[in-house]
Image 1 (cartoon, rainbow, N blue to C red):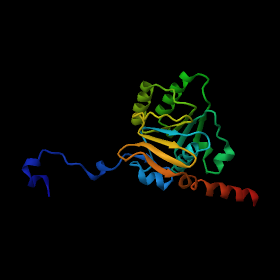
Image 2 (image 1 turned 90 degrees about the horizontal axis):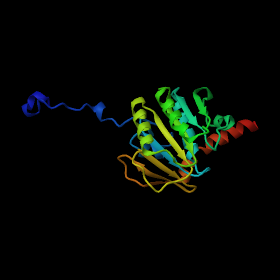
Image 3 (image 1 turned 60 degrees about the vertical axis):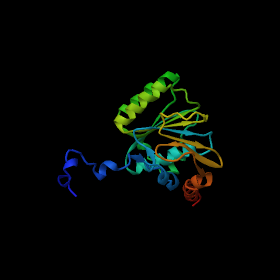
Image 4 (image 1 turned 30 degrees about the vertical axis):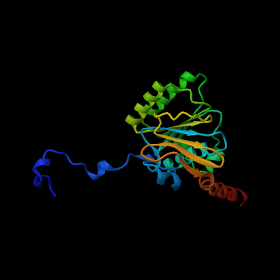
Amino acid sequence: MSASALPAFANISFVSPEELAPPAGVPTGISTFDDFLLWKGVPKGELTLFQGSPGTGATSLWIQLTQKAHEKDQWVAWVNSAQNLFPTHLATHKINLKKLLVVKEPAEQEQLFWILQELITSSLFEVIGCQLKEMFLKNHQLQKLKKLCRFHKVALIFVCHRASKFINPLFSLIIQFQRDFVTVLRALHRPTPYHIAGSMIHANFMPQFKNHANKLLS
């Protein structure tokens, strides 16, 4: 039915199917996450927070994101913290080291905000990861980073060791990692909290380690 057949609606602009498509995301490669989230992955142009102590899978999921971005020949940046990313470890996940920029943790906390702004505004990176011992950035700084991410279509992911009970609405996606399960604490337009068995997540990483080990033994 055309708009001309309904005179009362003649001046109303109709929305195309393309405009109703969900916002863009970077797939994690883990169907449990991608099928649940509106963006079919981690949102681009937004802030994401992974919370979990070392060994619970937060950094592993970021590495999985990096692998998916590299499959599309896109650049990724990582701001280092207490945990280093070793080339031999990254090789098990088929990470393209030529398209991964690793930035050393700055000596002063104030410098981190400046570094993140520079990385985002470079328009070079699809995904930027930043590992923190604790979330010390102020809300006005997060708001500035979020505005820049939206303009440059960058997915900015904070990996924080210390979990917070406060659900900061500036983060469009918040995932908490524990040894036995993973919880999506916040995800726009999705019912949360959403619990996922940890075995379903870690099972995605194990085949890659096994394949790498078999190559070393052969």
